[in-house]
Image (cartoon, rainbow, N blue to C red; front, side, top):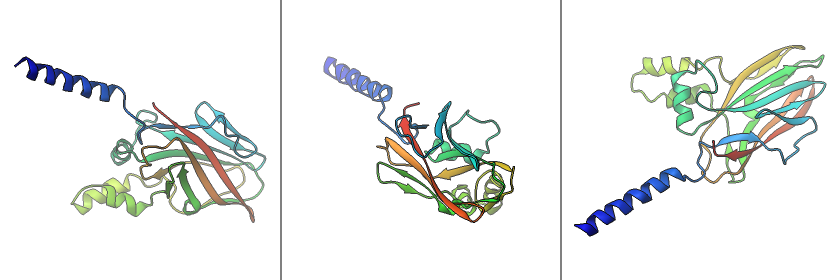
Length: 200
């Protein structure tokens, strides 16, 4: 009986230790990498990666539950399931149109992840309900909140929407948000935002 009791206590202690000292998970927060300078004009602004010059100011921040109010249920569910939600703001400071196409965006990591942002049809599939009307309603709650189609900003224009990526590998230490073919007028630029993954 004493042996059984001792074994039970040992198992409980092991379980408690495992819960108190979890390894790196997909729920880790992405912070701007202070050691990686990135492109000229890139800096860390209170946990937000910012790239700015005469033509634009683009900021990227990893969003977790509680960071923003009034998040749709489907978005909260995806965050809890490890999906990476990034708030990207774009301000056009140039005298030309700026064109951003999320298709030319990816999230890469040092664990060899290469993730593309979700599209509207993905939300319909992820709604997790057999009833088509319920799926439509849940997916519809995301309309206008995330980058889906090509966006054009006139001079002086601003936008703030989400980029949502599938879960990353568990052993991620560093990540880069890559933005290919950002158009400023007819000129194209390739941008990247370096991040490190840290426990919350």
